[in-house]
Image 1 (spheres, rainbow, N blue to C red):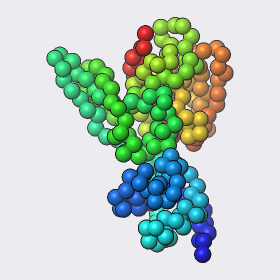
Image 2 (image 1 turned 45 degrees about the vertical axis):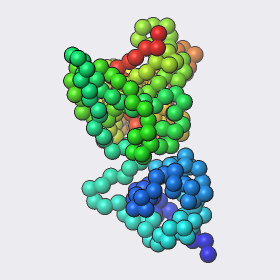
Image 3 (image 1 turned 90 degrees about the vertical axis):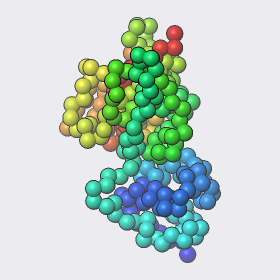
Length: 243
């Protein structure tokens, strides 16, 4: 008999799916294979996306997992995993007089995979790392992103051409309630539906969570987004230009 799951458990879905998969010592790809679905599809389920009943039924039958395990509340002191990966130490290397920070790179061809797998440390570990010369050992969560289109290119020195690479420092979600320093930085915004966007933030209203994203290229109109629809926000702290 197919069990019908009520929406009350969905608040804890991402936490529990990841917890149960780790207990079984399976990667996302291996778990997806046991369920007969694509890895990218399964990865979305670990980020609070509604899970079809038949998928949970298959999990229950294949792995003998009691249905009650899917609805366990998140323990006190542990936040859900859907907003960000757990911070991981950046690798620092000294070469001659230079300090180099090795940071995972999300190429323009890996955008879709990153959107599906940013909450999975295994996916992050598989990303290539590229070097950035820094003045000191920085703390925080850093990622490199390759610029995908010309929305932030207007021919000026401070614009971004396709193929350029930017170093982003993550702004953790609890800081989004404060006024972002929109005059000081450009931003990488990871939208849950629209993907990775490199933009300026023209307006930020912390009371409503609304952001107006602005492109340097006049061919692109400004867009409004809500922070509830965002997975991550990064400051652009360095740029490597292709040309």
